[in-house]
Image (cartoon, rainbow, N blue to C red; front, side, top):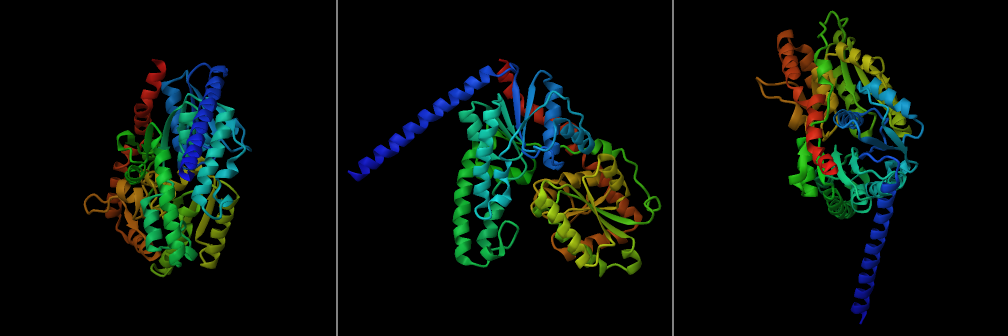
Length: 474
């Protein structure tokens, strides 16, 4: 009798849920028919559209591509940047990314962005942020119902909401899987990282519990991700992980993110004399924890013990980046304190939110590009440094290792490293190189980046999402 009653309750809950979903979907369908814009509406879900990072470059490149190909389409951007006026956002886009976006873009401001902030969830962060993205997505859908929904930040838990309830066509450009097999491996092997705290890694019971949690989350994440109709990923590394977790390889397309290589390739290469005989090492990365700025400073500390003092006096590490929020600003201040702790403050410069012309100047004056993020999904800044003529030392993992950097003799276009001492050794090797082998690597690096251009991205992006617009027109 108990089982029969339980079955009746389960069936009743299921039927009630279906009925509520149907009612909810009809409400959004009615909102769609009643909206003032009768043309096709494309909604981009990007709560941090004013941050100025690589993900934002993809957003604006996609908007620019759609405006160029489909001028009658109405574009809506869901953003949580409440303090930024639309004109300010578009001006920053022009200044930082060199994209002049038509003013026909409409911004829908979201007030619940705090629900996707990692700082809100000291425990079960992935689950908390994912559920928070649903709450944020509901706000977005309530404010404006689009025809086509494109997520450019990786909030996979919003896809069922917009597809099955909002009645939208759903596409995603995923930079980085929310959970990866590498993260599971770290927990299983009890490796300390920014996603696996020391207290958990050192405790076998906590590690076992976290592994169960990750596996459960991975299963749910795989289902919600697979509900997207078109899946675009930014690298071979991301593609492998998404195909493993989402299990939808037939609708997954690898499209490298847009890099401003055309302009950078046109920059003349400066001689050492024109660089005032300084050795500038440049990093372009947001001040986020995963970018691992401390490793850069540790590498500089190691480098000081390798090179001669007269060489060290010429070296400058220039950290160029942006901050999304107060936590990032605090992180940058911590890096400034750490540089003083290592007695590096006279050799390290911090440059925040540089305008595009100043960024170009910094790249021209530099000799070496530095990248330290473990399992970087792609690495737009690496490509841009290579296009500008820098010799890059990147982390030997993720997209940089698989898609960008080649280290084999005869085709070498950069260097790879993992630990601080290894980074210091490679940087010292580049500094000591004769001009001819150094120029050979620079030329090969520049010759390898055309496949990552803005034009290639826009062409492949439009080709991939074209079925949505063709079906809409039919």
